[in-house]
Image (tube, rainbow, N blue to C red; front, top):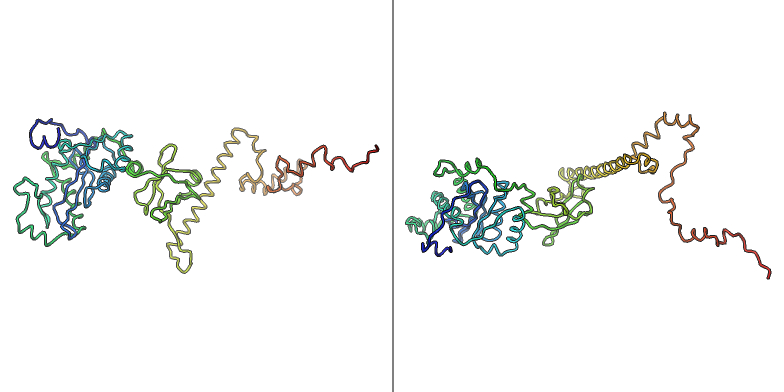
Length: 415
């Protein structure tokens, strides 16, 4: 049934039972706050995400209009504050549904089992719409209240003319309107309903059965666009509007991901980026923006010195991690083939082991016992002087049986 038939009471309607558990269903809708703001006779729109079971407002966002950004921010706030993705999300047939952002969001969350219901029937999101009256009632206690609006059927939906004139002269600042929005949401969530329990109490005490836990990595991956980036010299660079943002991987991740292409998501480029393994989709970590230090000593502060020391520690950590990785591979190889130690060149043996072997007097004495002389051990040939297996051009000619070098001087042949 359409909205016209339902509102006009021309046909019957189906009675429905609210969601049984918290996060079974979230309903989204926008509502204009009853205040003039910013000195321009404009109202701000509050987009709320309301849990259908507990009636709690689990997330919200404020903007000039009910646009794509405000809707997305409200949903992100809900997932962030609860730590869950719901079983179903209900919203009206808004232009948001035709945007690429909505398509991306629905596609990613649907893969995890979230159902999206887009409807024009007010019955489907009756909980979100019906409880706006509760918010409006709370707003009456604030200065500058304008009433429910000219479309209201409520006799007391608009204040008297004197109050309206006063509100027009004392318009609220944008910051004041935001503060009121935060207060009325908190008041509603902690105000007892008919059964004596508050929406917050009902939500917290209810079982979360038909929903999915969403940590910060899942939330960011689901609600923000994904890009690809290659880790170069241990860091990722992202350029937006001719501004370069740099993010350095910690030492623990350097050797595993340097030179590797990863998936990147972010909410605020000035804060951090979230990395995911391209093959598995598993979260790698949250990488903060790279800190910069002054190069000129006269400009350096204690903070600059701290950044420099941190960078030096990171470099040492990268070297240590690389050494541990090589040692691990070497140990695994020797476990499979103990004789492989004889094939290892000196420069591949850990320096500390070499030093112990060279300085150990017992080993030197044992070498003398078996007829050896430590003083006459030949030094290993430098790597650059080791000849390759494939001979170069001139050497190849010398080894040829037809070479003049091998045959000696030419002899005259009598004819």
